[in-house]
Image (tube, rainbow, N blue to C red; front, side, top):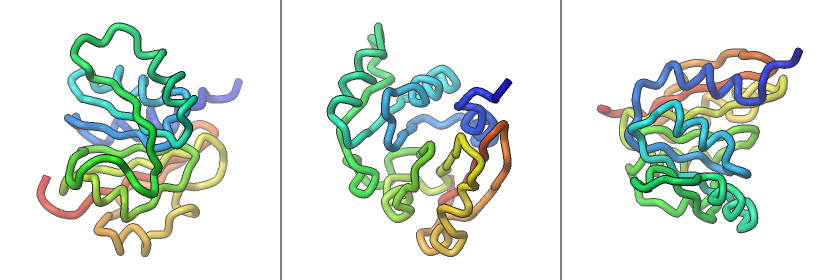
Amino acid sequence: MPAPPLTPLAAAVLHVGAPERILQLSCGDGEATLFLAREFPSARIRGIDASADAVRHASARVGLDPEGRVAFKQGSPRKIPFPDDHFDLVAVIDSRPAAGEASRVLRPGGHLIIACTHSSSPAGRLSRWNLHRHGLELCQDEQSGNGSYLIARLEGDG
């Protein structure tokens, strides 16, 4: 029986503490964003996707959320529609983020998770040099289920 698609993300979140604000890039139907909301019940979670249809579909899945903890917005991972130093955790699945944009919206000490649900390694998609160039230090690069994950930490206090 194959591992569930969110296995690499589920393994990675065990290593990042308890973030207050989370962003998922290229969130699609919102499945991983909603998983993050369940994993971190006190965090505020935002998902962005370039597709307006995906954002509408993901938003419809939220259900009752009187505190506004989970929200979706149209946006590009190459031009994230949030201010600098805003998130403690940025997550992306099966996509290559723009390391500079991810580090821009991360608070110092925040984490970037790149999860792949298939056999290719996130490290192969984003070099250590590119991470380091944007102030991100590689913390872990592990296999999990049928995929893998990478965790990097933005340098600075946090």
